[in-house]
View (tube, one colour):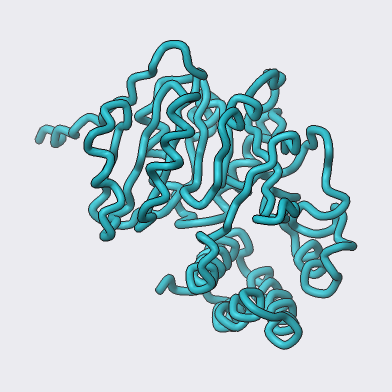
Length: 309
């Protein structure tokens, strides 16, 4: 019987004593000069740091050569967010994982404040995301996606969504709030829980893996908390309109996997209505995003999965 080929063991992130029992996992893809300032803040708090590079071509990881406490995992191709997070998680040995997007403006002490005094049944915690003007962002997290909730998003102004829409909405919380899912922009996850659930679902290239994880964690009896005492400035797609449009397409591609059969066609109609209205009535990035994703909506209406460009 032929022997299985030997697998090269993943490098392990060695924890540093005296810091949080947490490993930061940062997934990058052409993230330029953002990484070093982020690490300067993170490494003062967490015990270990893993950077997973999804085939960057802009020299993003070159400045890491002198950082001995950073474990770098390099992929020859862009494997997507969920697969890269799983790589980082498997290289960790701490009790917590902290997923950190390169487009967040992290401040000293925020990771500690996020993870402190969490009940044992809380599998994950995330801050309240805000924009540059400290206004809360709906991308913070939200509720179980259904056709009804997306219909509310399509037709009802965001100020009136409440729990009837798919995302967090006004009134934004002041104390810890239980949600169905939390954004991975800055997300603390108990590593044993993630492992017991089989890690993130790698079918999702980018987006919706957080929704899927929240669903499985809740089914296993855990809770997910938004902690608004930590307010995190998140640019979303680096504040770049073109990158925001590409992210919108990735989001629809992943969302479609969760709506098979006739529900995919119905989702396409609902999204086409919502984005169609925003393409006409919106402005700036919102208008560009809406126009950029309408072709994906048409593909869903035809019952097919959009092809990632």
